[in-house]
Length: 171
Image (cartoon, rainbow, N blue to C red; front, top):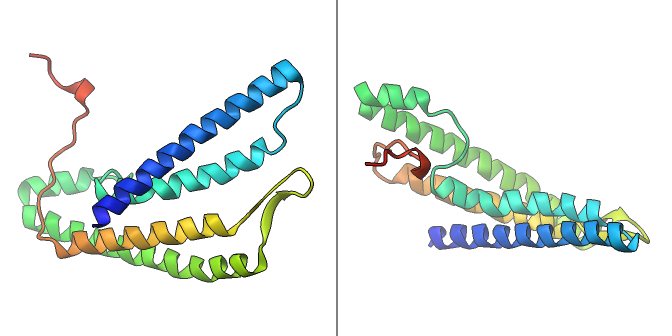
């Protein structure tokens, strides 16, 4: 079930990327052709970047593509696979705790922003409420916490090295 949610949030993040591309292109054309820039392009880009990161984070965690150095685990795993698997569980446990702390810390900010209708941007030019960003951060952190907990509860397996298709030998 968490896998479906993670894939769904990744797809939503991809749609935000496409929307961002459309907005930036609109701004470029509006500036160059009509000398009338989109007055809020900077705010939309800032808003979108946070959305993209936190919408795609759960799927990145799900498929083990979170940026980290696995070199030590790979070297140790060759000689001591059980120790490497245990260490991987410790890392996933610590990651779950940190994600839970992020979710716990952001929840009061979300409720405050939702109640006060606080916004960012320049009044009269472009404004948007803060609460959707805070909600996405909370939901993303909560989903990442669940994914890390599931990884910890699963039996330890030795992950295979990931090779990009462009580096495969053509035989």
